[in-house]
Image 1 (tube, rainbow, N blue to C red):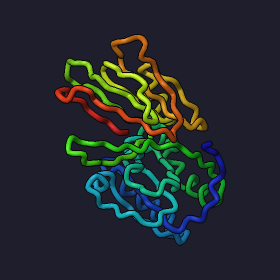
Image 2 (cartoon, rainbow, N blue to C red; image 1 turned 120 degrees about the vertical axis):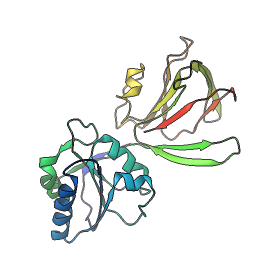
Image 3 (tube, rainbow, N blue to C red; image 1 turned 135 degrees about the horizontal axis):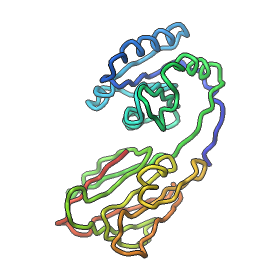
Image 4 (cartoon, one colour; image 1 turned 60 degrees about the vertical axis):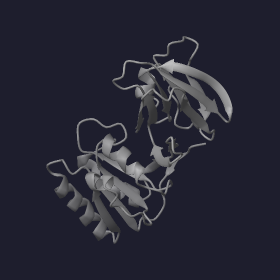
Length: 242
């Protein structure tokens, strides 16, 4: 079961990931770096755009500081192989669900982390493997959801859904959403899916505008293996991992 607890780990190495399009971001990054330096904490700073080029080499990171919005936060998750490292999101815009702390609370938040006064909350990740026709495997991580959808094409997608080697059903729909508790209040909820409490270790499978009324959302344990296969090789579909 996921747990909420005070963050007590000593921070020796911190990673700063920032959205470089923001006008004052370099000044904020320098402020964070200077604060970490005074605490004798080594820092590594990367812009969001440099992450997309694969410039970050994973190391022993004790804390990830995200300066930006939810998009920056979600992209940062994709590049951290150590699932136990905590993320601290500072919202540099007007809205933020994952980046809940405001820019003017940056130093106070960092102090709370170092002093063990910040509550950390574990969240489930969706481990995604994508197989092409040549059986080549590409792996991704999703914090919010994984969406298979028809995009701008007019046809419905015929998708078979298998859970733990048991065929559940085939669905003809605009797509399918596989959501974590974190993402359950986003696209999943808008499509009629359930809200999952973060401490319930489960994923939701929600069809998007299914052709059949019997294809309803399904909740499965987050330890189960799920297989989604497009039955018609002539159909095109889009995969979004968020």
